[in-house]
Image 1: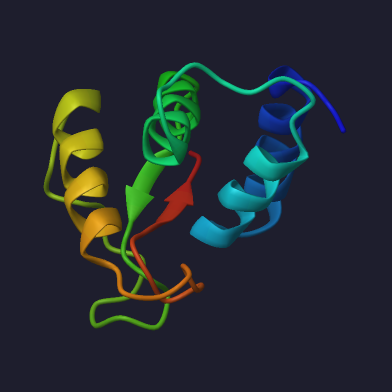
Image 2: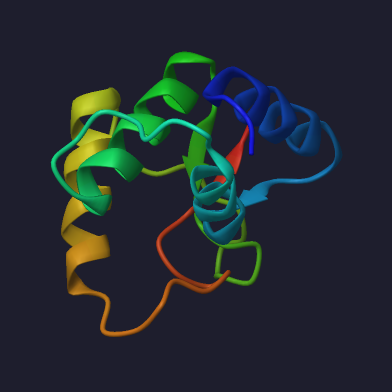
Length: 106
C-alpha cells in the first residue's frame, strides 16, 4: 500500500513511456493506504483523476480508436470529470483498457 503522492508519481513515470490506461488509474486507487475523499468509489476515482488533471495529465481517446490518442474536446477539470462520471456510470462491466479514456502527459 502507498500514499496518493507515490501513486501519482508512479503514474507520471509511466506516462513518460506511454499513455496511462484507465485500469492503471484504478489499480493505483486500489493500492492506496488511505481512502481518498468521496462518499463512494465513483467520487474517490474522480478525486484521484482531478489530482492527475492538476498535475498536467490530459485525457485522450484510446490508442486503438480512430483517430488514436485524440485529446478530449472537453476543456477544464469540471467538464472532464462530468464526462468521466457519465461514462463510468454507463459502464455495465468492470473497466477495461478500451473504456473511458487514457491519459497523456506532455
